Amino acid sequence: MTKILVTYDMFREGFTELESKYEVTFPEGRDFTYEEVLEMIPEYDVLCSMFDFPVNKELIDHASKLKMVANYAVGYNNIDVAYCLEKGITVANTPDPVTAPTANLALGLMLDVARRITECDRKLRREGLGMKVGVLENLGINVTGKTLGIIGMGRIGKALARRANACGMEVLYHNRRQLYVEEETKLNVTYVSKEELLSQSDFVSLNAPYTPETYHIIGEAELKQMKPTAVLINTGRGPLVDEKALVQALKDGTIHGAGLDVFEFGDYPSPELLEMENVVLTPHIGTQTLETRIIMARTVCNNVIGFLEGDRPVSRVLRP
Image (cartoon, rainbow, N blue to C red; front, side, top):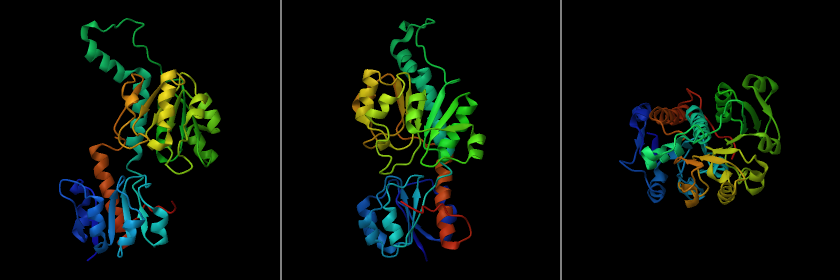
């Protein structure tokens, strides 16, 4: 029987069909460590990996029977895709379930920073009845009538554009490939250079994948091109932003604020960001809803079953 190894502890209801057809091994109450998987992997045909679990050359070389890696994420920079493809191993991801919740979070961060929601919540809890609530206190900025610049117009970027349109925003975008005119018209978006986007946008949202080309796509030079009233939103990948440069830009007023769900150096932001009132931080919760997690698990299962049985589509990763 085909053997499937799942590296992470997850909702079992998402794996019901897979368990009914194949031998599936789960960790109990925790995730498997890399060392445990390295020891176990020679016996397995399929590996279901989490977004932060390294599927590297060492692991792949130990996986003598491995035919597929099904990643529980839309991103796959945890996987050596090129080496997998060289070895004839199929790689799949879960792009569709993450689209709406991640776009919702990006919009939420944008509204939060603009209207100072988290800042005012903290202030009210801290100051209580002593907090000033006059007509000129705690002024935020509108999003309606403002310009949103989206860097990375994939599924999530498009979903965010639709939400921004509903808020009455103008939407600019920059992407490695310009969309067809018909799709631009449908989405009500305008393609511009990165430089134009940065200089014209009131809000800049990063929705690009992490690749060698997008590393530090926002650094000191790019931050200086932005408006001093602009807000940077990152729900994409942490290394898209030079965090040291961002901290300095927020300190000296180069930009107005930031909403960050991801950080350059892993799960935690620079300590200085924690002290800034004009920054809203969330701990990588772009897909962190009950419904999304279950649907992602089902998508992983559908990818595996589709690969093994050929009866349904597979979200294949075709290039690194």
